[in-house]
Length: 57
Image (tube, rainbow, N blue to C red; front, side, top):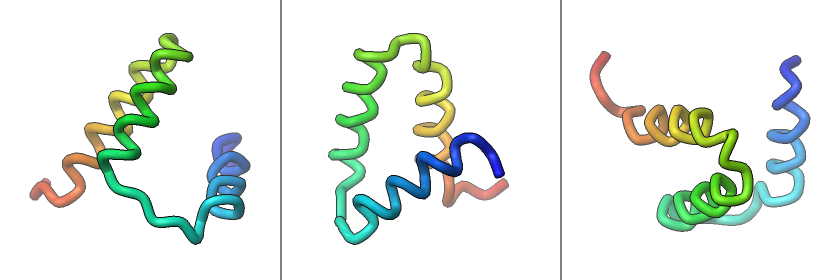
């Protein structure tokens, strides 16, 4: 189990029944990076990965 699994499990438990848009998610990630600028590279990698999920390898 990775350390992040606990956070992901909490997210699923607390907000798993909600529906969100990618626009909302993008805005929340921008707010997060504004508050935690040292995490910008990780957020960038996650956002790029999500954006390219359907791309052919």
